[in-house]
Image 1 (cartoon, one colour):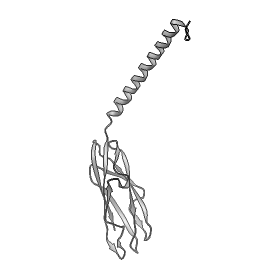
Image 2 (cartoon, rainbow, N blue to C red; image 1 turned 60 degrees about the vertical axis):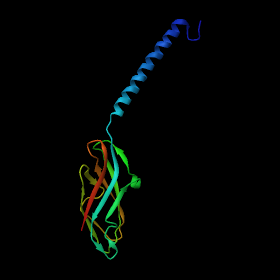
Image 3 (cartoon, helix red, strand yellow; image 1 turned 120 degrees about the horizontal axis):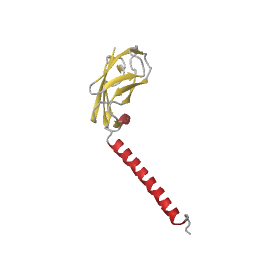
Image 4 (cartoon, rainbow, N blue to C red; image 1 turned 120 degrees about the vertical axis):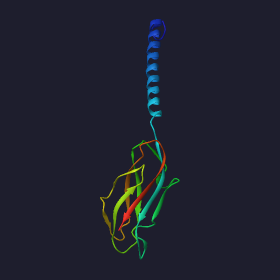
Length: 153
């Protein structure tokens, strides 16, 4: 008599092992097939442009063009087509009077979803803060760079 209960026990154990192996193999193939076919959008980065004036301290909100690429600010990233992702813009107030962020536009194929502040928003002097922009990625897979314009007054 063998440890597993003789010849019938070995056959039963071998059958159970074969069924489990087939189920695991099928699950792995289904998973691999599903996830290998998911399209991806690579957001290499981009630029944020401020349409702003100058006061005594220089540009109202810091440099008028900010680059987001080559490993800066968390870019590049990979997302699924149409997914939301965030761009964090440091708002540096350099003027002695309040100024307003009036609107935000994003060039196609990206779309502007929302910001962490309702627009228009008045930014008082000395109130440096992050403006978090949520953008929608393009609908087609590929590699893209965003271009955001922030209109101020």
